[in-house]
Image (cartoon, rainbow, N blue to C red; front, side):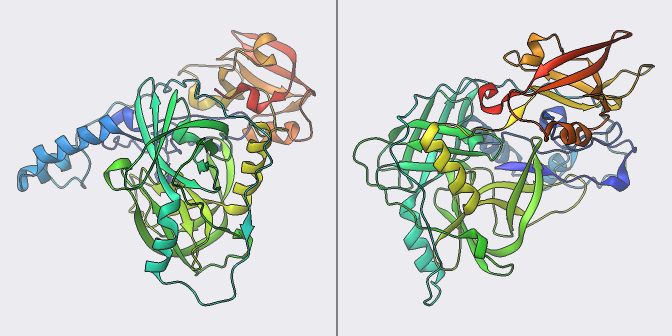
Length: 435
């Protein structure tokens, strides 16, 4: 489950202590042409991707709780680590903040499934009969919910999946299986385990389709139409909070908002907002309507170290899920998305003190498979103009890029080591640069 960190604009510019976890609690990933503006120098609060449950992390957490469960001593320890508001007579400890290092992005090497067998995700209109009870909704959907376990070079991640066809197609989140070499699927009761093949994955919508071949005891879920939802309707989330620790958990809430625009890892997503409780491990799980139909795939929750935030969870609408799933099954990727192949952010955030050069878009990284890399653009360059237009912000660069398609070119004027340079780069398919 992604954690979307909420900013406090009124605190911009203040010296703020880091929350529990220090630098390790943050991951900052600006994205090509779509990253939101950054505040002045201060601890950044941005979506962190991925935020999966890893088995070894759960064991560490359990050991931590066992050690600390000792009354007042435990409360003191929690307060000193920033997990409770500071209440001592002394000032809280000072922290020295610096930008965290990027987590390594490992290639996803899961064996691929054959494509183009004609399978599509079917959406069903809401029935005209009576609503189902919570008990009936759980009984209907729990056989369709599975546990996902992904083996990565840095550990094991766990999440949730939704079976949507009798022949073993399964939906989950991209961030659950990203970087994996092996993905295992099992029913909630853990009676059997299956190695899954990867049909396709899309980082922009955070969706992935898996396939288990051969006979299984899976039951496909019934997917509903998200376009007809209304704010205030009952909604239920079914998934595996904390991964394998609490499989098959259902929480109840309502549809809190529709078409909520959220920028996650630099990608703009239109999501269903719900107050049904979501936690790490719910990633890829089902958001279900009052008729027992899956109308969303859970992906995100909002958190804050500055404010109390509860009941702000988000799911990918079934309309989006169908469009992406059908394309992944047909061709293994989503095409038609031009990209430069860089990550960038406002230069004032990255340059060292004493810098007296021009402000613009600071290039954080350049994908080696992109044309931008081939033409000589490198991390540390500061983009000033795109096709002759000043592009001091991501929004400005987007406005230029969105008028073009894959294969079209951009003229980039940038600054490096006291020199102004100009190159022409071709836009490439986004999926070709996906790890």
